[in-house]
Image (cartoon, rainbow, N blue to C red; front, side, top):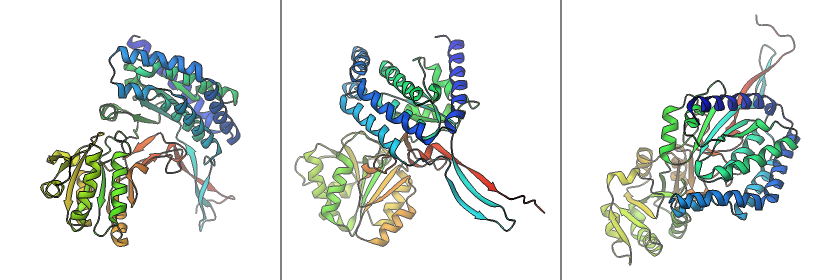
Amino acid sequence: MNASNTTELMHTLGQQALAASRLMAKASVAAKAQALRRLAALLREAGEPLALENAKDLERARANGLAEPMVDRLKLTPKVIETAAQGCEQLAAMPDIIGELMGMRQMPSGIRVGQMRVPIGVFGMIYESRPNVTIEAASLAIKSGNAAILRGGSEAIDSNRALAALVQRALIDAGLPADAVQLVPTTDRAAVGQLIAMPQYVDVIIPRGGKGLIERISAEAKVPVIKHLDGNCHTYVDDPCDIALAVKVTDNAKTQKYSPCNATESLLVARGVAKDFLPKIGAVFAAKGVEMRACPESKALLAGVAGATLVDASEQDWFEEYLAPVISIKLVDGVDEAIAHINRYSSHHTDAILTTDHGHAQRFLREVDSASVMVNASTRFADGFEYGLGAEIGISTDKFHARGPVGVEGLTSLKYVVLGEGEVRG
């Protein structure tokens, strides 16, 4: 597709999304719920056709030499499809927050002032690999009364087209505009450049993928971006703490799954508990093949652990997001040094303290400058579904407009509402 055709295509999508967003903003609760339930039913009915389209993507990916873990992300297995369908049903059952009035208060002048929750309008989403994100984004767009323009990865184009067609069928069946969710039909990279530079149509861009993609979008976008670049998450083991709890939670935070952005990448340990705690967690990591990049003090305490892979930590390791069976380990004096270290080196995504000291826990919650801060829990819980949001469109480490897992509420805005009975300003 040549440049002028791509520009024309994206502007057409933008115009259609803007028109659809006006209709979605006033759609009834019942119509949105009907669309979501219909989409769940269509997903379950379309198992075989979806598998055929997905097979095209898998075959092309393998022919192009895509690494097997990346191929695995492309798979639309029956379990993946069922999870997506259940997500739609959960969203349909959740209370609808659009039009909600908050904080109405009477002013001395006689007017009443409050705020109303409203859709953002049109969001663009750019994502890689996993085709199930098409359904997550579409279902959240429907629930929040927005319109969405979705640009999935070229490696999943056939799967995404098939899924987007189901979304549009569900919208039409519920009496809603098909253009409320549009998939960019081309794999031309120029389409991304157009999508992120159309403030006349698009209110916010949400990139979901590797750091390179997100950095590019953030640098070039002419509309606001909701994003996070890194997930350098910390678990801090405090003095005092429950050692058994600390071992269990730290193990889960690191090894339950290595690739998500909420996996712990850096372990801080208070010197007062290090002799007791480190050999225990070191044995767990050694058994699971986790490489430990340790400061000199922690390395000395881990030296006796059978089968441990120990490496001297560099300054860069404190910044690193590994997404792999690797963890950095550092001893600190206590909660003050832990908080200072996290605020300097973390990516402000998710950080946890494991402690039995209520005062330390409260200080950690107040002073650590991250989107999610936890006490005695695994960082792996930083997730929209686990937070009860029904689904998430991504995680934001920005402070505006949304922070942390972004669900329906993160795709809305507030406007002031004034109710009067003929009051005039004196």
